[in-house]
Image 1 (spheres, protein in one colour):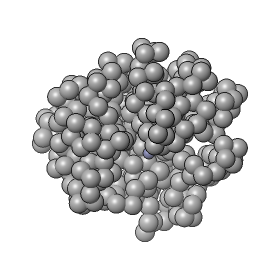
Image 2 (tube, helix red, strand yellow):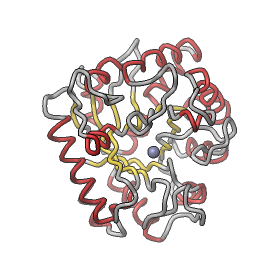
Image 3 (cartoon, protein in one colour):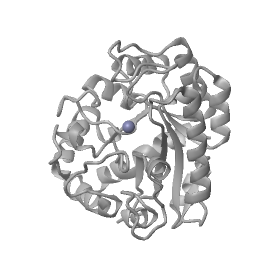
Image 4 (spheres, rainbow, N blue to C red):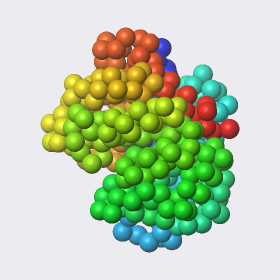
Length: 315
Ligand SMILES: [Zn+2]
């Protein structure tokens, strides 16, 4: 809790940098943008920990790397009790009431599932409760925004999305080609999220979402997490919290107060906002939400909107 706000961040690549750079979560001077110490100071109650794998690996190799990241979470993040895994809606309520930070495990890009529903089930049993359907490329479920073809969900993708929702896994459409987002919207009335995407009407980057998809996501009961990636916010590296606020204002205008959440992408970015460089500086954004939008909207944006999706999705 930070100033009465329950705070959820829907996307950070902490595990990826631990895997690829050997960085420690608990080192006091850790180079992670979101280390244990920074997370403690950030005000975040629940952080989504993503397992992202470089798409140059084959799906089978990616599955091994996902398993390695999950092992790293259990051994190197959860070990001393500063962070605790959330797998049920009861866990969330318990952790928000405590001083322990909750962690939700997510797969960013379902390449490792590779057409096998059995792999989806196995990953669920290993604690995955949130899945980004694609990264920028194509996989067995759908095309990402970087795939020129821009196709929607495959037959297997439709089957997998339905199964995710049946199991109680949050469906995340960030990185998905727009056709795919339309497909998810037309096949289900259940809430979905775009964990780390901004408004295309404010800055026309391919990773940002047009108004009609934002409205569809919010009508599903879902929400859009604004992300701190400078190039998605304004096309260059010199962006600040002020510029991020412009995306939030637009989302609030087109989708209302249920339509905005937070998805930092810390440790997935090398360039940061000039005044929000790591988790330690998160409170500056939270203070700004209260000043800019008032307490009721700030509560929703900081955490209640993602909490609503989680309560309505995971069992
Ligand atoms: Zn991403």
